[in-house]
Amino acid sequence: MIEIRCDEKWENLINKSELQKILTIFLKYLYAGERGISLYIANDAVIQKLNREFRGKDCPTDILSWAYDEDDPGMFEAQMSEAELENSESTGVAGELVLSGERVSQQATENGWDFETELFRLLAHGCAHLAGWNHERSSEEASEMLELETELLKKVGLTNIY
Image 1 (cartoon, rainbow, N blue to C red):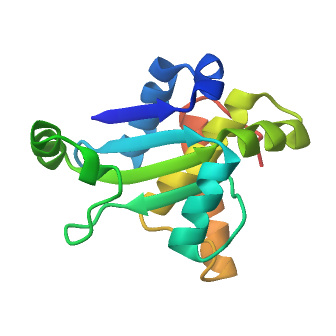
Image 2: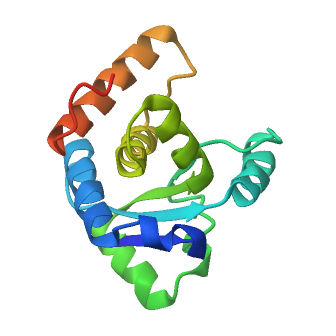
């Protein structure tokens, strides 16, 4: 199950069908077996609140990720119905991603490409985090994570991003 939600401001910029395809490709590359994911595209105020609450950083960021753990259900998992939970358990849920639509828009402009390209780039980054990669532990792992993101983006036809 791939759940995609977004604030009204981002509804017209988001092609949910395309995002489901992209996320399915990323998850199949990163995990053995079928995996689901929850994606929420929010504004800076929402992501700043989450960043402060979960990471102790009182500023907006582009993407936050929570890998699901059997002992620590994610914040959106707690809101799911019993039927949705049973379905997610049978397929395996990788985790949750929250993106700032404002950061996506700003970074797309800074990088010289469109909103969708930046969105896909950040989704590759977030999915790598869900799969256990962490660019903050060491420069070696940061380099390896960037290589993985590049491979994910190639799978969806985006080359020469980095």
